[in-house]
Length: 197
Image (cartoon, rainbow, N blue to C red; front, top):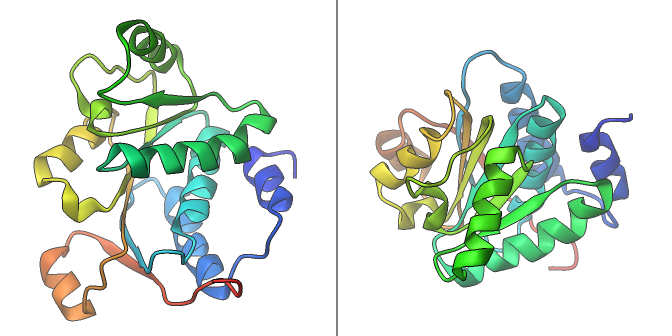
């Protein structure tokens, strides 16, 4: 009950949907495994993938690791950052913003914080640049993964020593096609929207 994951979960001002709980349970169990997770989380825009990703990040942080969330555009990455910082900063989590448009001083400070062990990094493909050095990356999350190339997704995973990986997509992919395209991924589907959406 004193874990960051529990504190964050109990602080949520809304109830998770059955689909979110089901997907979170899949992730929770995979994160507890010694084998690196490689999971696709599929769900419509507004289905609540970000809060499930934040719960996963909390679990990685509880285990002493860093987490990173990479999005394909500055706007989407910034939306994630603002939401996540409002959720997790009250619990003392250091959330770092990293993007290609940052000024030199801001970027130097962000890079130093990441290397120093800042718990969560949110940003664009700037996260996978060679000068970004994580202290202990344990969870890599990629949003709108189809907008990144295979090498870009792998580059984030290679920032850690075999980190768990979650890729998220709002693009519906028929299950049979998903198995062909992403045969190396476990697939979790959020097929329900929260009541107010």
